[in-house]
Image (cartoon, rainbow, N blue to C red; front, side):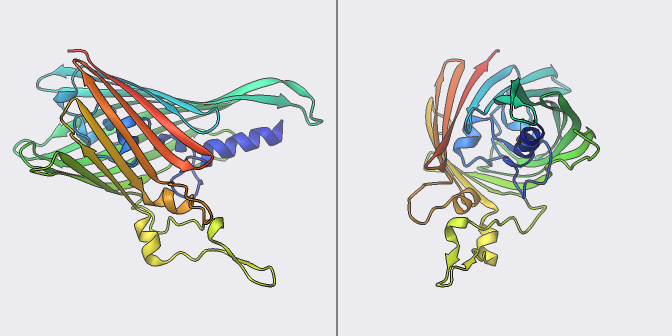
Length: 336
C-alpha cells in the first residue's frame, strides 16, 4: 500500500510538470480549454474566451459578462479533467469577476497491504477554485489582472491544501491587429503537506503575442514559456547512442535546441466566423517524445470551433505518442 501511494504522489507531482517534475499541484499547468489546446497548449492572448483567464487573468474584460464554459479533457489512461468557467459582471464601473473550478480525477486504484492482499480500492484527485479580476489603466491600452487559487489534493486518506496566485499584464487595443502579454503563474505556498515536507508550486513565467493578418482570415499565436528557468531540456532516450562496447551515451542538447523548446505556435483560421479551424505545434513536446524509428507527430495539435446562436462547441486533438493521444471538448454558452 505504501509503495502504491508513493507512486501516486509521484504522478500528481510530476507527470504534468513543465520543468523537471519537482513541484506540487502541477495539474495547474494542464490545459483544459479546447481552443488553447488546439493552438499548441500555451496560447495566452485569447481575449474573447471565458476559459483564458484561468491562464492569464489580464484578459478579463466586460465582453466575458455572463459567458459560461464547461470543459472535458480525456487525458492519459483513466485520467480526466473537468473544468468550468464563468464571467460575472459586478457593475459597469467595477467590471467583470472571473471564476473557475477544475477537477482532475486519476481514476480508481487497488488498495493492498504489505503482503499484497487486496483490501479494497481508493481514489485520487486534484481540485482548484480560482477568482480573477483585471483593471484597465485609464487612458491606456494596458490591462493588469490577477487570480487567487484555492487548491486541494487528495490521495486515499492523505490530503494537501495550498493557495496560489497568477499575475498578468496585457497590451491590447481592439483597433490594432496585435496583442502582447506577460504572465507569472502559480506562485504561492503549500499550506498543508501530505507529510512533513512542503513543496513548491509550479511557478511559470510566460510571454505571449498574437497577430491578426489584415487581408487573410488568420490569427497567429506565439508563446515563450518557462522564462523563469533557462535550461528546460530533458534528453530523449530514443536519441541515445550505443557504441560497440555497449556503452550508452545520452543525447547532448545544444544551446539552440534548448532555446527552441521554450517556443510554441498556433494559427486560427476564420477566428471571427461561425466555423473556424485551429492548428498548433509545441516544440518541447515534440523533442521529448520523438522516436527515431517511427513518425509520431508528437507536439502537433489541431481542432475546430462551431458557433450556433448563443452556443459554441470547441474540440482539440493533441498528439503525444503513438500509444497516447488526448481529446478536449468545450461547450461555451452566452447567457445574456
